[in-house]
Image (tube, rainbow, N blue to C red; front, top):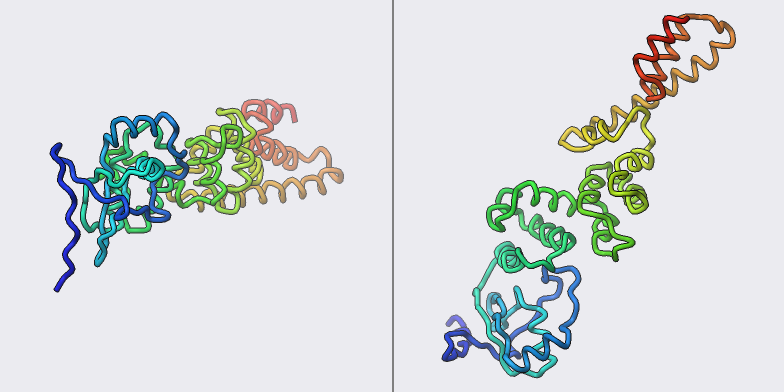
Length: 290
């Protein structure tokens, strides 16, 4: 016979209560990456009025244990105070995907939900096979926002850990998205660069630490990084840099032998334009003087 689950106590106020000994926290499940312990104000409030908002809990096959989906701080406070039971809303047996979505919905509009929390939770959703569209519909967030969280979740660990640090060592969500679009081997360097830049200076700095590609400016680097063809375009830009350097080496060798050679001078002006050292108009002015 299937095991019958232990019934919860139904109170006069219509809420369900579970013995605190039946409730547990599942390690690694909390959608918040960093949560402070209950403060004295919270403990005083619970001592005088009890727990106002019930804990969201779920069950697993063959177990009476109730695992906390939402309400980890309230559960900790109940343990500190020594409550014998806590109010709960029992969601029954849930899949990992549904459990994470339920916890996220409960936290969606709370101010304490940080970018690091969203990235961590969306990373867990990705592992369950959830798509950006599905997560957007379930959580009620714009697809563009969910896509950014998903993108950062796949970035180098240095990017994700920098979202959790104190203000001095933390990078913004915008910077994290930009860096996560770089080649994986360039991301740790870009994190270091992003921490030392002004909010508007991250793109030029990233271009320097990833190879100082000539001719790349804030405007065209913005176009270069996003999109599915980013890797191919980035490789093309690196190849373009090498070709420019090879041409410069050839010009440097040949020019002393024939300093007035118009073809060499023209190539030199072209390279100067490509490497961003000269404007196109100025190059034509100089060419006319040759």
